[in-house]
Length: 79
Image 1 (cartoon, rainbow, N blue to C red):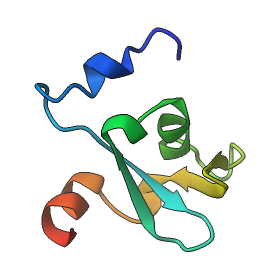
Image 2 (image 1 turned 90 degrees about the vertical axis):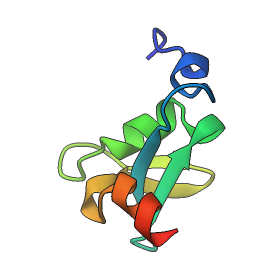
Image 3 (image 1 turned 45 degrees about the vertical axis):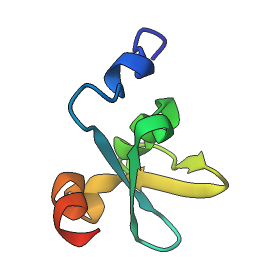
């Protein structure tokens, strides 16, 4: 993932970007945004539990955000 410029992707003048991932221990959706978005957040969001190991972020295991919901709708209606 070296070719992705996170500064451009997450720039304030661009559209809002949210990356959702599920905390394995709590089963709660974690929505990453701004400076939180990086390779680990992207990998965790795409981590299918039957194919890959969980991705650890700040000492917590995460996997695919689709297991608990749509991050865009979650942010808009439930935060």
